Length: 226
Image 1 (tube, rainbow, N blue to C red):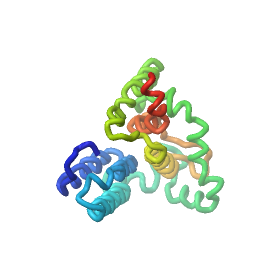
Image 2 (cartoon, rainbow, N blue to C red):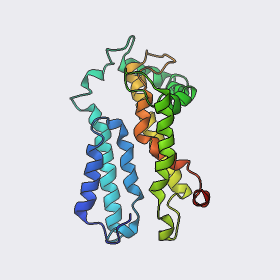
Image 3 (cartoon, rainbow, N blue to C red):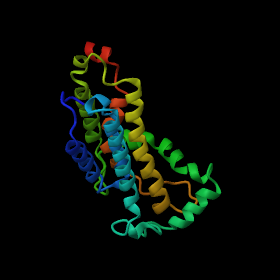
C-alpha cells in the first residue's frame, strides 16, 4: 500500500503465498488472507489486474480452509478428537443441523460467556503450561503501544488509514478466525449436544489480537493529541 510503483505479478503472488503458508500450522487462521483485499486499485496496473488479484486471493483462501479436509495432520479428528470424552464429529454436526438455533449457537454463547478470559485474563496461557497474570497485562500494554505505530504517516497520504470500513473489516477478520476455531472445536472436541466448548484456549486469540486492537483504536485526532 505504501510503495509508489505498481505491484508486479511476482510480488502479488509472493505476498499471497507467504501469507497462505503462514497459516499451515493452523488453517483456521486463513481469514487473515482477506487483509490482501485492502490493497487499493492504485497499487495495480489497472482495475482488471486488481480484480484478478482479489480472485486469486479468494482461491487461495478457499484452498487453505479446505486443506483441513485433506488426508494428513487433521485426519485423526474427522470423527472426533479422542483426547476428549463423548465426542463425535458426525454426531455433533447432526445435532447442530437438527437444532441450529439451540445447539448450533452454543459456540457463540460460550465465546460470549467467557470473553473476558479469552480476550484478557488468559492470553498468556500456553497449552498446559499455566497462566500468568503479569504477562497478560504486559501483553495488552504492549499492544496499546505498538498497534498505533501501524498507522504512522497516515496524514502523509492525505487521509486516515483507519476508516470506519477498514475497522469493520479488520474486526471481521479477527472474529471470523475465532468463530472458525470455536465451531471446529465444538464439532471435534465437545460432547455431542453439550453446552460447553471444550479445547478452546485463549492463546488462539493472540495472532489476531492486533487486528482487534486496530479495529477499536482511538480516532486519529485523539491519537494525535496523545
